[in-house]
Every structure is written in structure tokens, then in C-alpha cells.
Length: 208
Image (cartoon, rainbow, N blue to C red; front, side, top):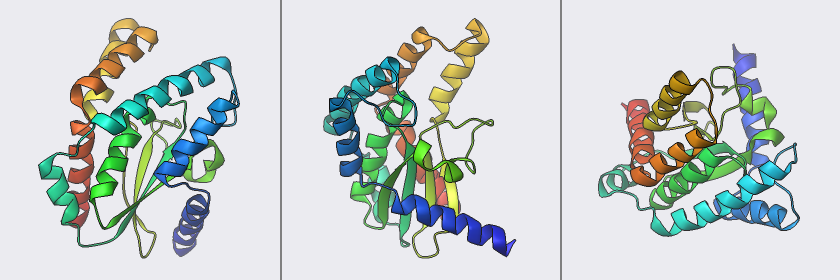
């Protein structure tokens, strides 16, 4: 068991060494787009197109998303230091909607440090946080800042968004472009509130 714990901490340390601040993550994605590339180990016109769309979404969200007063108070009252390590990629539509919200939350939380690691560059870590066997992102891994112990994880979608996709797939058999548009509408309507509430509730469970 000790070997497994040590192995996990080493994987986390490596991911943290490879990670970016939010500002540097944005610069990385923007710089690659300027070269006609996306993040990740695969390159395609579609991935580049999604990356470009996501740039616009993230720029908008950074200006419009606000942390609710209730969530802000709870985050400011955290009495332990945490690292929020997020696995993401620039082409991911869910990440574009969620990572700016997490960034805004971390900004108001004195005891939270946000780090973003690219999924494809940190496969050893991703393998420990699969969703139904898949590498779904974004994935938020909450770490004790002192021990680097994993205390909780969240993602890749808030409950309402997850249910929307499950219902659509049950009705239509696929997740197509229409489903993706409906998902983006859901995020737009929700204004990041579900993400904030679910992450704070997770923290409360950890600390209770």
C-alpha cells in the first residue's frame, strides 16, 4: 500500500512540474493556435477549430463569470492549503466552460493554488482518474498542499450537464453536434453556478 501511495505522489509531483498557471495555460493554447495547432498529441482541423471556438468562449467567461457570495465566503474560510490540479486540453468544449470558473474560484480563495496540466502530457495521472474507462476532461484533482495526498476529485461535468448528455444519448443514440450545442446552451444559462456549488460541496465533505 505504501508503495502505491508513494507511486501516486511521484506521479502528482511530475504532473505539477509539467503544469501551468492559468495565465500560462491560456498563453500556451493561444500560442499554439497562432501556429495552426491545438494542444494534445493529435492534430486535426477539427481540434484546431474547437480550440479557436474555445478561445472566444474563455475570453467571454473571464469577463462575465462571477463567484457567488455564498461560494466566495466558503472558499475564503478554508483553513487548510490545497492545490487544485486540473487536467485539461485547449480543444475540449467542457474545459473551456469549466476551467475559467475554477480559475475565478481559486482567485478568491487564499488557501487554493490552481495548476493546470495537459491531459496527453500526463497520461500516468489521467489513468488514475478515468470516467467510465475514458479520459474525459476537465478533471479537477484536489490535493492537500502539504502532503500532496489526493483528497477528492471532480469532473468532467457538473451533474446537470452530465444528465443532459445522458438524456440526449438515450433519445438519439449518439452525441452529435446538436447535443454539443445544447450542452453549450446549458453552460451559458447556468453561468458557472453549478460548478461552483459542486466543488465547494466537495470541499465541505472532505473537511467535515
